[in-house]
Picture 1 (spheres, rainbow, N blue to C red):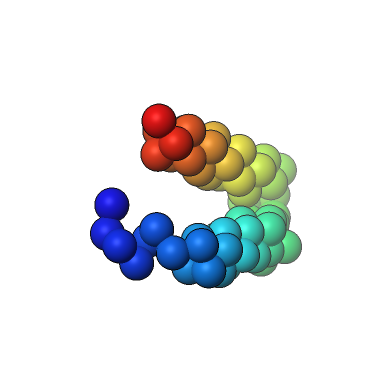
Picture 2: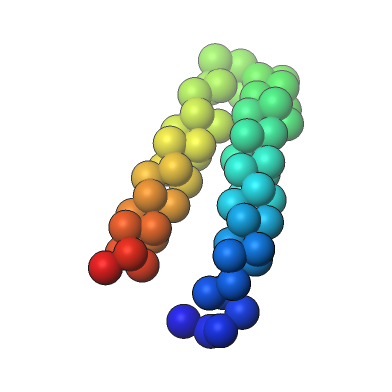
Length: 64
């Protein structure tokens, strides 16, 4: 792992940025998807769940 990624301040701000991106994605994508494909609003939720699982797996892999 690069030295700059071991910095706690960098880790904190990366977590904040990733959290804002993941948290705001349903607000951005749900209206767009609902307008383009009515009834297919579950795609942003599925993307959110998959991203969360990937981040948890990445975190657990890096702890060991």
